[in-house]
Image 1 (cartoon, helix red, strand yellow):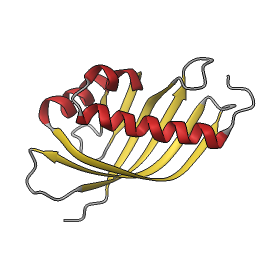
Image 2: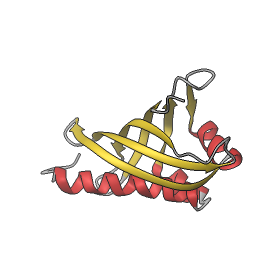
Image 3: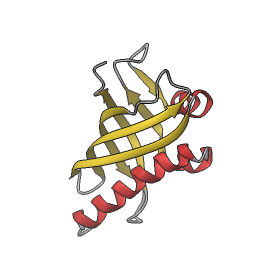
Length: 137
């Protein structure tokens, strides 16, 4: 449990970890990516065949099928729950990957749930991502 949580400092850390996660994908660093994602991770997205994938499936999709060229986050909100052990981050993520059918960036509204995994202030892992496409074409 985090005692006397500094929510601004932890929100900044979680935003940095979100960027680190995408940078690990861009740099094809599976180990760094895996370290940031909880073993019980679940991605929920209505474009997926069964609406969700687990950590190994998500990593296979990202690392074996696409290369991340560029990305950008706009962070909208971070809320802490369960005495600082859970955080919910709302963001807009822009990505450009190859191969892709066009050169346009894809935009997603992400709701991420991060869980605090130890007594160290910087030990967070991504537990769940609900991703909704903002592309209407």
